[in-house]
Amino acid sequence: MNEELRKLRDQALAGLQAASDADALEEWRIEYLGRKGTVTNLMRNIGQVPFEERPAYGQAANALKGELTDAFDARQQALVQESLAAEMAAEGVDVTLPGRRPQLGGVHPSNQTLREIADIFATMGFQVYTSRDVETDEYNFELLNMPPGHPARDMWDTFYTTTPGVIMRTHTSPGQIHAMKELGPNKPIRVILPGMCYRYEQVSARAEMMFHQVEGLAIGRNVTMADLKGVIVEFANQLYGAGRKLRFRCSHFPFTEPSVEADVDCILCGGTGCAVCKYTGWLEIMGAGMVHPTVLRNGGYDPAEWSGFAFGMGPERITMLKSGISDIRYFFGNDLRFLEQFG
Ligand code: PHE
Image (cartoon, rainbow, N blue to C red):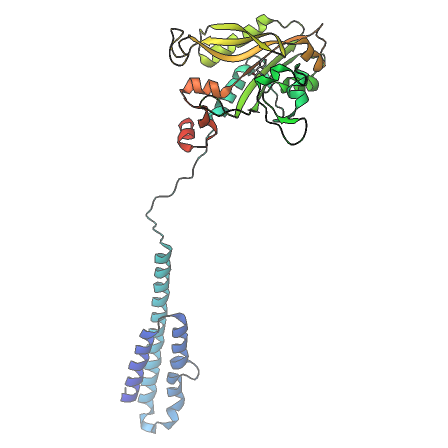
């Protein structure tokens, strides 16, 4: 190989090494190996070489072209590898890292208790009936025997809306009227009515402004207070464990007559007295009573032929007792450290 070719070769290889991206590489290819490239021209110029030197010159030029073509291919490969490696490094993919676990949700503790309650009442033939959270004054109060101005309305601090007569329900009892109107008249009813209630409360460890209730309603031709007692005892035994003692205390609700509050013996101390039952030995679990004749009539039932019982309880309170939760505000605080304990 003559001096000229050797210089060209060294220059081309140095240029190739310096080409650091696809554009530079393509420029190099056009300069040396392109149709009008330096190396291509070597062949084209063979006519100017003295006749006897032509075979050697031709061979050398061909060899150079082959060498540079191979070098080009190798450099191109190397650049592809380099850019892949750079891309991988930039994306920071570490294939040895363990995968991320997807976060699994769980059933809210209130809903767990609601399901448990619904399952227990299902064993006694009660179906679930739901009605709306936004109620009318008529259903929340009037049809439940509390006309406007009735002093008993003070038992429920109410959220009013800007629409006159439309309020957030303060209890699930308006569902009694909805159920009677939809499922009756003149047909027996056995339903529970779970749902969210709202009260304009000073929020504290014991009181929230939103909470659940589970209402119960049974209507039939010969339903008595003994049926109410039997159903509640059975419920308490299934929920809190066999052998529960139950007592009724006199109470007053405008929509039941007579009205009671039902207590079970304290599930913590068994009745001997502790902080949970405030040393009374008893825990209040629900308000209840026989459906007031006026309420039966408002639901479309003739109180001369039909009678019924109703009760209402708070699943958050039940959950607090069962799980030793000291503050009702945890339920709607959306703190995962609380919720995850009920996974
Ligand atoms: N609605 C009553 C309350 O919120 C509870 C209740 C329901 C009482 C049904 C008697 C019958 O306090």
